[in-house]
Image 1 (tube, helix red, strand yellow):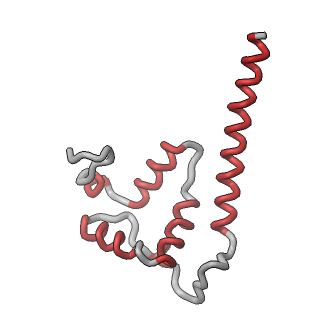
Image 2 (cartoon, rainbow, N blue to C red):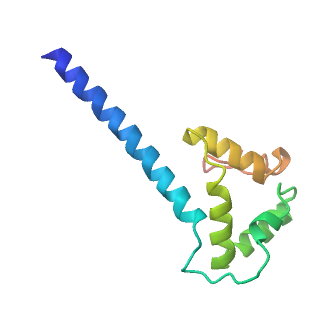
Length: 115
């Protein structure tokens, strides 16, 4: 009985992992397809043209202001989806290393309190 329970639990976690991978692949495919929701026309790709990594706090503020634009935000999300790694922690580390230099990140707290 215990052996069967362990097998069922193991299958449950394996299935959960497979479903999360499928969701991630579907999301990547959704962002890679042509977007019908936003008409981008012949505009330059701001996500690629943004001068990453961000090197100053002023650039962070400018980037934050630019994210208010739906089209730009969609392009950034599309760009960041291509940086997904196998685990959440690897993905976060990779995205942050691409977007910011360490001296900028050291001025912010990621736990909700100032250092």
